[in-house]
Structures are given as structure tokens and as C-alpha cells.
Length: 366
Image 1 (cartoon, rainbow, N blue to C red):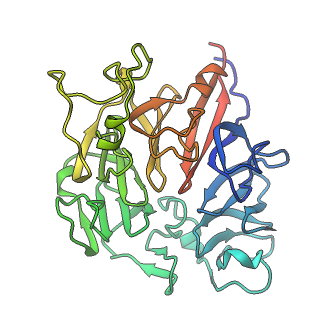
Image 2 (cartoon, rainbow, N blue to C red; image 1 turned 120 degrees about the vertical axis):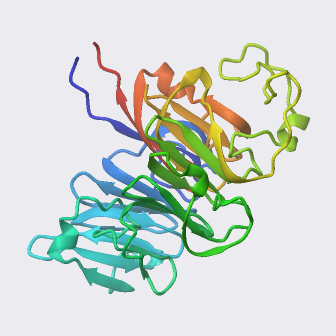
């Protein structure tokens, strides 16, 4: 197997504020993937609605969009509209978590800072921000910025939606809490939960990743299965919605249609029931029997990376955040052909509210 070449980050979708994209920076919509602008070599990208934070391989943090600024010694960053959280480790200093107002340009004093204890820094079980190193707490966009987790919750990953939180524990179980009016908690009701509650519908299944959208949720199993639930207003659950069915035009032979007509159907060929809210996890089958290894959710769209290195997207597409070269919304998964046509193997995906960032490498020769 040939040695894998260094990869490239690509972005597409909402770009009115100039989020770290290429030639499309001045546009409101970039409907096809474009490499991030020259000079940016990020190892991590986190996007809020109006700005993007890129952590480079050399440890620099760069902000672009409605917020601008730069800092060195950065290991990770988490961007939300109200708060920018940075994990910094500068020479001669203990690693420190810092919370900034995005418009501060990282100048002056942070809103909140906390030095990391050596044992927390060395904890290999903690995932990326907003889960704090040590896996015993997480960062909230509103004061108090540090929120503790129950001692019995050994967290591996945490994702925050617009009104809810998803947590993956070390045992592979999923917990959720927060607002539930769109079914985004997955407990079969529309009620809120004040404390983390395990998803009983997934009990006994080993999960390896969770993703929280604005008002929908997803998780991936060890076997590569996708479970998804919550609000389906724009088809972000890959379940049929009325608005798309009413304007569907037959597109026979389209490669990634499930039924060859641009819309979902039941096993007997009859139109499937329209679904606005799915309050408990539903198993989603990708086309061609693909297995999922990475997932991310935007405000109302979803993106999944398969084991074969392909990217599927669906949901709201008004700003080109699905990457299919147009502004069409979809209520079923479709492969992003750009990466196939350019012989690129997708490794990672992260969705901002209205945009998508993808890391891909050139396919090596066997």
C-alpha cells in the first residue's frame, strides 16, 4: 500500500462572513467543496453561524468571518455564537482552558480561564471540546461556563445542539438532556430532561460516536449503523417530508436515489408517510450498504463519512451546505460526487450550522 499523502480541508455552504474558504469567500453560498484558503493548514475546524475557528498543525488558532484574531500554543478550539473556548499549552506554562467572547479578537483577558491539573491533561479518555480534559465536566455557552458531570458518567464524547446535549460514555451508551420539544432527546416524548438520561432504545448496542444538530441527533454503532432522531423539518433525518415530495421531479437513473424518482417510498412502492418529528432513534440504511464511521450535524443538515471514504449529506441545502453544487434540500442521503470525481478519500467531517468542512486525502495506489 502506498504511503498516504497529507490531506486537505475543504469547505462549502454559508459564507456571507468569509469563513476561511477559497475563491467563494465573498459569496453567500458556496455549493461545491473548495479547499480552505492558502496559508491555512488546520488539524481541527470548528464553525459557529458567523465565524470559523481553525487550529493549525503548528499550534496556531485563526479566526475568520465576523470574528477575527489569532493565538499561538493552541491544541483545540470550540466555537459557538456566544463563546469561543480554547485549549492552550504555551512553553513554560501549564495547559489552560480559556473562554473568550468571539468579538474580543483574543486580546485582553478571557471571560474565564482554568489551569489544567496534570492528571486531567494526561487523561486519554477525554474527547474533544466542549468536553473538558479529565472527562468530569464540560463547557457551556452561558455562565457558569464550567458544568460538572455526574461522577458515574465516564464521558468519551459530548455534543451540544441548540437546546440539547448528547453524551457518549466510556461503555458506549448514549445519554441526552435539555430541551425535547422536537424529539431531539430520543426518549419517545417531547418533554425536557434536566439531567442526563440514558437512551433505553439503544440499550445493549455499542455506540462509538454521537452528533447533535440544531434540533436533531445521530449516533453511530460499532458495526457502522446510523441511528437518527429529532426534528425532520428539512429532511435532516433522511425521512420523507411533504415539502420535497410536492415539488419532486422524476429523475430516473440518478445514481444515489433510493427509488429512482427523487423521493422515498415504502417497500411495496407506495409513498412513505411524511414525518415531522421522530422522537426515538430510527435505524438509517445508507445506499449501497455503506457503513458509517464519522457523523456530524448542522442546524438542519446531516453529513456522514463511510468506511470506504465517501461522504453522504442530506437535509437543508439552501446555502449549498450539502456540497452537491446546488441549493436543493434532500430527505435521503446522497453521495458528494466531488470527492469521488477527484479521487479523494474522506477522513473527517464537521458541520457548522449552515456549512460543512471536510478533511480528505488523495487515494493511494494498492
